[in-house]
Amino acid sequence: MKSLCMSYAMATSVQPVLRKTLQKLNGFKYCGCLCLTPESGHKYSHTEGIQSNEMKATSSKPCKGEDILAGFSYRQFLDHFYDLLREGQDKARVSRLLRGIKNSGLWKNDLRLAETMKKIADFHLNSGDGVDILLDKEGLKDCIQDNIVMIRKAFVGDLVIPEFPKFCNMIDEIYWACRPNMGGKVSTYIPQLASYSPDYWGISLCTVDGQRHAIGDVEVPFTLQSSGKPINYALAVHELGAEVVHQYVGHEPNGETYSSIKLNKEGKPHNPMNNDGALIVTSLLYSNMSLAERFESVMSQYKRLSGGEYISFNNSTFLSEKEVADRNYALGYYLRENKCFPDGINLNDTMDLYFQLCSVEVTGNSGAVIAACLANGGYCPLTEEQILTSTAVRNTLSLMHSCGMYDYSGGFAFTVGLPGKAGISGGILLVVPNVLGMCLWSPRLDEKGNSVRGLQFCKQLVRNFNFHHYSCLQRPGVELDPRVKRTDMQSNLIVKLLFSACNGDLSGLIKMAMSNTDMTLADYDGRTALHLAASEGHLECVRFLVEKCGVPLDAKDRWGQAPIDDAVRFGHEAVAVYLGNASKT
Image (cartoon, rainbow, N blue to C red; front, side, top):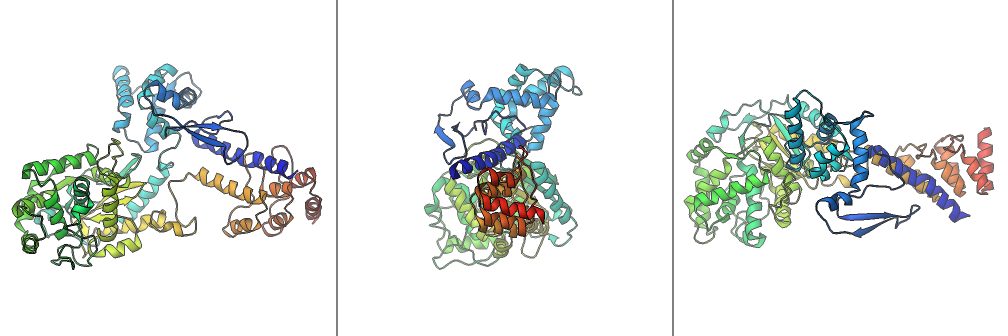
């Protein structure tokens, strides 16, 4: 009887929860199967009941063309997708396709949507811009089939931040909260930087799946300055390996200003994020080439990291840097005197390349894609091309976390807990590993050289979201996790609640009640924790739910059964008597 009851409870409680969740999330009607076959290179077979082996992954080779479409349950997807876009009318509306793509966070210029967007542009060219294009099923198939992977992921919420509009609204709220901050001053260390307006303020983000959002002055070019140092270090490690690079530079924070003249006990600069260590890294970059070729090679890599977006060079800033470079030249000569450079290095070429790399221009949007490459383990989210090795990225993020914010690096690691790198132009590259990269820009700097608005934004970001490196140690619910859908959170909560009741886990129920969980939650079939505890005969759990949590005794499931009916059906007399008496009081 117990095994029958367990099977009944799980079949009527857990499986409908998952089924309902999938229906809500994906907007499709499912015929018994719990999911569409994902594009991860696996096929799933389903067995009856909720068992640990319910989904058995069987490997399958990635294929191309029609085989890929078949592997996605393409016909089923197209049928539901067509119904979704036509809204009960005769044909699918392209406007709804475009709106869905936009809401997912993908931009029209995304290379992974290029073929579909070109076909839509051709439709508008032939029909006029103001006309909503209508497509039959075959026309829709032809329109989307080249980019079916990304379109499917966008519409079933399979991107890293599934509820992207909500996330963006919260980002915008932080942006506007930081805008009135008039603290700090524009840098005058380099004369050309003094020309930036102190009112500039922009934020752009790009997730590891290429979802994008931007607000403020995100198209205004600015020079990377020190925020480019982690990229240059990553390129050096990618080309030469960490062992070679760290023969010449350390990896410890030194607690000094970025231009301090001080070596570690081994006679090396402390880390690549300060000027002395960055000079060493510069000397290693493509050192077997001419100066012009070295600069072009680095710029080519920056272009790849940005997904082909805006990367330029500001010659006036370069010349301005050289005019006031006494301190950096002193660093260079000091390093040469102490034999810190590799043999055969031309100091003048190294200094020129260093100033050139500081004068590389980005916008907030292109900077965000570069940061997202670091978040994505060296792969550009927009082109899906690997540009950096995972080892180079891991080392880079470690150094950004410990040394990236000048002599506020320890404070930043403590309060924000994320890899970041600031530059005196006001930019900050911020990385949330496996989630997203951000580029923040505001020229108002504090006394340590960090953007005051950028720092304020970063601190509020980790208050709102569980992005801090150690947020996982906090009680769930303190910060939001944008990677989880609300429906997923709700369904997981229901499954956990019902599973505890079904198994007589009184301590689990107590803990959920202590965390303010709604103990009256029901699954798709209207079955509550009290239903399952009663059907399994767990009297103590029943008493707790009734006496301590005050759950209703007369809750009916879809079959019109109350908890007392389940207790009677499965022969749990003590539970039935208790519920009968409780209903009379």
